Image 1 (cartoon, helix red, strand yellow):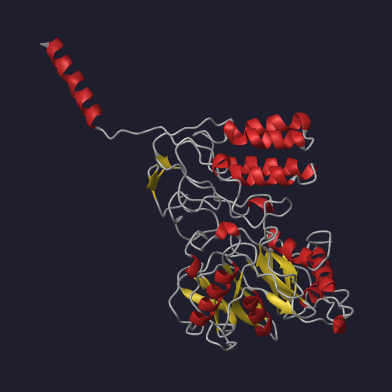
Image 2: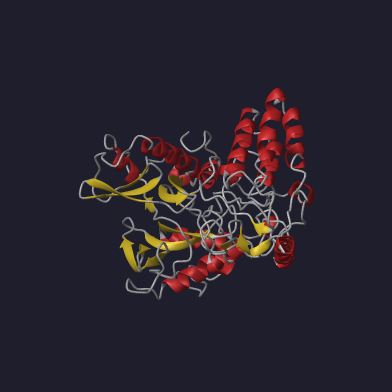
Length: 470
C-alpha cells in the first residue's frame, strides 16, 4: 500500500509539472556581440587592452548580471576608445553593443538600467529585447509600467515593445546579434566623439543660420513615448517633426494655468514661466528678464525640451527645422506659452551680452562675457567661447557661493537661481545636466538642462574648440 501511495504521489507531481506553463530560455553566442568591436580596437592600436574589455562586456549579456552591468561595460569600451583618438568605429560598435538584447532565462523581457551612463555617447541608449520575450512581463515577474520596465529618462513603456534606438521596429530575432542586423546605432552620430551630434551629411545648418535645439528632454507627445515613432529617425530626418512637436506643445501650454491638473514630475510653461508638477500641483519659476518659457525642438535626436529663452530665439529654432507658423504653428509667434507637461527638462535662463562681471561667479553666470565683433554678425564663435568660460566658472560654484538676486548658474549639474542672496537649485531631468550654451541668433549665452553631448555639439557648432569648458 505504501508503494502504491508513493507511486500515486509521484504521478501527481509529474502531472502537475506537465500542466505548468513552459518557459523557454532565450540565449545567444555572447562572444559574437563584441567580436567586431575587438577587431576595431586592435586595428586602432589598442593591443592587449582590447580583449579583457571585450570579455568583460560580453559576459554582461548573461542572465545573472544586474541591469546596469551592460551599460557599465559599454562605458569601459568608450573609455578605451577615447585613449585611441575616440576611434569612430569603436564608438559606433559600442553604441550598438549597449543595445544588444540580454539573455532571458524565462522568456521574460529583461529589465532596463535605471541610471545614466558615464559617457555622453551612450545617452538615451537601452537594450532591445529578443522577439520571443514576453513584452508585458519582465524578469522577476514585474508587469510592464513598473520600475525597471521603462528605460532611464523615459516616462512611458517602450513602443513598439522590444525596440531600441538602433532597431525601432521592435525586438530582434532570438539569439541574433544587433551588430549583424544594423550598423546604425540610432543616435545623432556614429562618427566618434559625442554621440549627440547630428550625423554627417544630415546635420542642421550651421549655427550662423540655424540654431541647435535646446536642452535634451523626454520626447514630446507627437513623438510618442520613446522617440521611436518619428518617421525615419535613423535617417536623421526627424528635425521637421521636432519643430512641429514643439509647436504643438506651445499651443497646449497657452491653455494651462497654475491650477491645471498635472502628474508629479511633469514640466511645462505657464504664463511664460517654467512650471514643474510637485505632488499634483504646478510650482512655477520665473524666467530671467527678457525671456519666456517655451518648448523647443532638439537638434541631435527626436524630441523636444522646455527652456527659458527669448521669443525670437524660440521661433528661429523652430523655423530652422522647416516648420512653419511660428511658435505655435498658427502663424503667429505666440506670446506667453504654458501647457501640458509632456517634455521633461529643467528651466533654462538666457543672458544678453553685458560687460563681463568680475568677482562674483553668480554675476558671471547671469551675464555672458562681452562679445567682440557683434556688429558684423560674427558673434557665434565668441558665444561659444563665452559659454565655455561660464561652464568653467560653474565648476567652482557651490550652493553657498555668494550671488546677486536674479542671477542664474549651474551648480553640480543642477539649475541654480539666486533668491535673496542665496542659490536655490532645481534638479535637471534624468540623463541631463545644467550647462551654459551659446545663443544662435544674437550675441549672448543661455543656461539650460541638456545632455553633455548636446552642449558640446552646440559649442563646437560655433567653431569653439576644447569641449564644454574650453
